[in-house]
Structure formats: C-alpha cells, structure tokens
Image (spheres, rainbow over the protein chains, first blue to last red):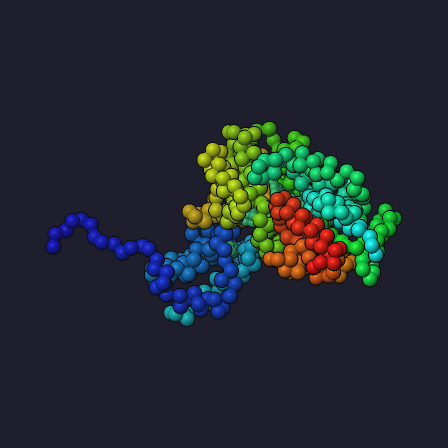
Length: 115
Length: 339
Ligand SMILES: Cc1cc2nc3c(=O)[nH]c(=O)nc-3n(C[C@H](O)[C@H](O)[C@H](O)COP(=O)(O)OP(=O)(O)OC[C@H]3O[C@@H](n4cnc5c(N)ncnc54)[C@H](O)[C@@H]3O)c2cc1C
Ligand code: SF4
Ligand code: SF4
Ligand code: SF4
C-alpha cells in the first residue's frame, strides 16, 4: 500500500448514545451530589493544585459523564486525582453544595476496587 | 361593611400602579409605605432596560397619577384583625381603618453582598454592587469608583443560584442588569476593558438579546463563562479575581480597578411577619405563596388578601406593573362578589 504520510484518525466526537457510564453510575451511588454539578468552575478556580497539575473537579466529573475517562484508560482522570491534596477548598466554594472532597475520595475508592 | 377601602402595603411600582387602577375602578385605595418615599427600589435606579427609560421620570409620572389618594409614608401595619367581611387595621402612626381587601405589595430585598465574604464587599475598597452602581449613575457619588479605570469586572449570580448563600433560585433580572451596566460603563470609560463572569446568561425578555449582541459587537464587552471563586486585594488597592474559564478549561486571574457584584433579589425581610399577620403562606423560596403560579399569582390562599409584584418572586418592572393591574381587577371582582 502506498504511504501517503497520513492516516485516518479516530473521530474525537463523543457518541453520547454509546457512552459507557458504568463508572459514573458507581460514583452517583456513593456521592449523589455529582448529579447537580452545573460546571461553574468554582472548584477548579480555587484549587491549589490546579494550575500546576491540571486538577479540576469539574473536568473529572465531565470526563466521567462523557466517557473520556474510559476511552483513555482513565489516565487523565487518575492523573488529576493523584494531584489532589484533599484540602477541601473546592467543597467550600461549590454553589451547589456538592461534597467534592467526598466525591474525590469515592472515585479513588472505585479505582482501588478496579485494580 | 359597605366600605370600598383597599389597604395597599408597600408603595413601590406594584403598590402605586395598583392604587391608580383601583381608584379608576371605583375603590378607595390607601397606601402604607414604610420608607420616606414612594417608588420602592425603582426610585433608586437610573435607567430601566429594555427602553433605557429614566427611572426617576417614571416614578414621578406614577406619583402624579396618585394625586388625592391617601398615602402614609414612614408607616407600617401594626395589627390587623379579620372581621366577618373585611379587616380592621391599626397603623403604626395611630390611624385605624376598616377595609374590605388587602393588597400586599411589599417587594423584595437585595442580597447583602457582604455575606459572600470571598468577594470582599465592605472590606476591599474597589468592590461595589449593582445597586451602588445605579446610585453612582444618578449622583456621581462613590469614593470606591476611581476616575481612571482600565479593567472593570462584573460578577453574576451573587447570592443567587447558591446553596451556600441560602438561595438556590435565579434572580432573573441581574444578567440583564449586568449587560446594561457593562454598556453604560463602557460609554463612560471607552478605554476600559469590561469583563462579565457568568455561569449562564439568562437574557429572557423582549429585546434583551439585542443588548447582549450590542455589548459584544459595539462595546467589546468580554464574557467569561465561569464563576468567580474568590477575590483578594492587591497592595495598590486593586482587586484580583480568580475563576475558571470553563470553556477554555483554564484557571484565569484578573486584576481589576472595579468589581461590581450582581446582588440577587430575595424576599423582603417583612414577608414572614406580614404573612403571619394575615395568615397567608410563605413559599419554599421564601417569597409569598400564591394560590398557584400560573393562573392565580395575585391571590393568596385567604379570602380578601391579594399580592402584586416582587413579593411573590423576582419580577421586572413591566411584569410588576402588569401584575398590579391584574390584582386591581381581581380585587374589584372580589368586592363585587364575583370570583
Ligand atoms: C439592581 C437592579 C436593577 C434593576 N433594573 C431594572 C430595570 O432596568 N428594568 C426592569 O424592568 N426591572 C429592573 N429591576 C427590577 C425592579 O427593581 C423590580 O421589578 C421592582 O422593584 C418591583 O417592584 P415592587 O413594587 O414589587 O417592589 P419594591 O420595588 O421592592 O417596592 C416595595 C415597596 O414596599 C415597601 N415595603 C416593604 N415592606 C413594607 C412593609 N412591611 N410595610 C410598608 N411598606 C413596605 C418598600 O419600602 C418598598 O417601597 C432591577 C432590579 C435590581 C435589583
Ligand atoms: S480537595 Fe483536591 S481538588 Fe479540591 S481544592 Fe483541594 S486539592 Fe483541589
Ligand atoms: S464548584 Fe460544584 S457545581 Fe461548580 S463545577 Fe465544581 S463541582 Fe460543579
Ligand atoms: S439572572 Fe443571571 S446573574 Fe441573575 S441569578 Fe440568574 S443567572 Fe445569575
């Protein structure tokens, strides 16, 4: 086959009807507050670890909801979580009153089980 | 009782317009207003969206239309007792009156911005509210607003959509107020950059979207989708805002010369007291509870007690005026014995 120097890359579009929500459903059970996130970004803005590590509770939640986590072998979500110092600042600013610290802990537990 | 007297509690836009209509319908309205002036909150605003009508000229015009109607300023209801077909009322100025119906038009209260401590209202010099800015438009007096401004920030949803502040509701008018005030500031400070930090832009009314388009196209206002998490003061007195630009997925910081907080609308502090006096109910959002929120917004669950304006929820001026007229008609029908 002739090598044209480029290949067909997989579309980056998320197929919402095919998303695998297994992990997200587990998290919902442990921390039901996750459902009320309105992606305001307060948690990310206030996070001490954020600017250096890319940690963002908002992105973690969205990645789980859009399956980006599983598609990329959870690498990115796990990397974000590993930077968290569990300081709880994000819980203090969340306007929806989500216990984000508990959310992070719950997700870590889910990953522990998967190992 | 063959009295045609209707007691109106609150002399804001709602109470004033209801009084005018009730008189036209042959009733005898009496306004009881706790402050020293008519007009309520609108008397403190500068120009009203969407027509940029002068608020003071509107209040002036409305006041003139009340000529001859009894208005008690700096007065409140001290006690009220239900009679067989009406109410016996005692006012704090010692006046007693008998009336067939009562219209509650006690309006709203602005969220106390100092309660969101992370925004530094009352602590940092360069932090004001939407209400303060209207006052400055009217009077030019506010030491917190410097002569030269390079960056002006507006923070939406202050004390609204915020469980931590005890108010999960959207205040509805503040997105539009922010866009209006952003444009007015750009007109006064053409060289300044203006930043609106929003979670969702709720511009629901007639012509509101035009303001948004104008703000972008003609005034170059920047809209950042993210809620400001905290504000700190720099040594030069300016304030530093922290937010996430959620569309870019990056933390952002802004050093601003002026920060305007879009304080939300809450139920008036007297609502619970007024409600218990007439045995009306308070709703889960803290505002007065209407018989329903679709068809009978003006009616309480008690005969003879009616509502108009922002005492039942956040309203714009045109919505308030329309409700006041509807309440006047409801009261007229009630007095005529038609439900
Ligand atoms: C910053 C800001 C800007 C706004 N700009 C606009 C705009 O440009 N256009 C627009 O359409 N809407 C605007 N609004 C909304 C507008 O202010 C309201 O729609 C309007 O004030 C509602 O009128 P009201 O009479 O129901 O209540 P209010 O204005 O709150 O009046 C209530 C009156 O009742 C009196 N009162 C309260 N309790 C008692 C008591 N116990 N006894 C006696 N009297 C009492 C009060 O003193 C007051 O005078 C704005 C709101 C805000 C917060
Ligand atoms: S608990 Fe973790 S995610 Fe939340 S602010 Fe602290 S470091 Fe950031
Ligand atoms: S602060 Fe709360 S609502 Fe806002 S993005 Fe973070 S988790 Fe979601
Ligand atoms: S109208 Fe806009 S600023 Fe006001 S509470 Fe609703 S979303 Fe927030």
